[in-house]
Amino acid sequence: MPISAGYLSTLLTVIAAYAIAAMGLNLTMGRAGQVNLGQAAFVGVGAMTSAILTVKLGLPFWAALPAAAFTSFAVGSLLGLVSIRLRHDFLAITTIGFNFIVIYIFLYYEIFGASYGIIGIPKPEIAGYKITGFAYTALAWIILAAMVTLARFIDRTWMGIAFESIRENEDVSESIGIDTKKYKVLAFAIGAMYGGIGGSLLAHFKGYVVYSDFSFPYSIMILSMSIVGGIDTWIGAVAGAAIVILLPEVFRPLMEYRMVMYSALIVVMLFLRPEGIFGRKSALTMRMQQALYSLLGVRGGGGGGGR
Image: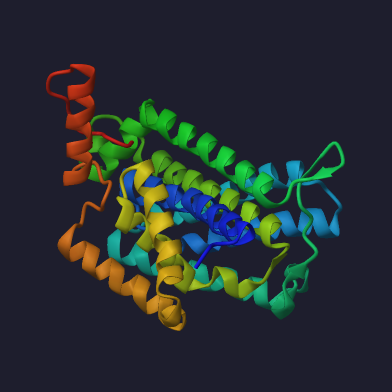
């Protein structure tokens, strides 16, 4: 059955937005080793920030998007402060609880539209021209490319080295002078910022936001994107988002059970391929690296592909 242009535009836009959110989770969990099972909450913070600023205060998209990123960064910092005292299982439970708290706030406070949400969120405009359809899709992918560039830059800075060191051994990291508290907070804050940017893009694309779009099952969906694609690479986030978004479309008769599908997908991937399809140590990534090295005439080559 042929795919309409509008439907294709929708799929590509949603993939780009969720890929950005998954990249944030990859940074927090895959790079810094900090458990976050509530990423959908930060997507919601970004979406609600954009909705309130544009609908209720009349600000343009170009002001709302950075504001959504900043607000999510700030909220992520607060959760990061909690992570200083908690590890592993307790941190996982805390992030789940955080997701439920955010949903409660969205549902019971009128400023967030309560159970009705916020409608009438405007599309971005340039010189009076509304960015819709494939133009909006292009904008989403341009922003995704910018966030990939930022992620790659972070990987190559002292911050990226500190994140990896904390992930491997927090106690040893402290012993060699790394301020683990600061970098754990930064890992949550930057990961949350990515989620907020993805949420802002979704809000302006759909034109409305409602609390249920950011509930805990959506955190599981984003987690499945990271695990399927590869939780320690940016390409894994993009590939994982594409797979998880397209999977229910392929099995549309099972759409009602999509959350069960996501959960089952996580279990299967952790059991069969825990590094993900495009993880740094995955067989596919290694073969791609070897092919690239052969093409360039480079001998050897270490890990880190797709970072």
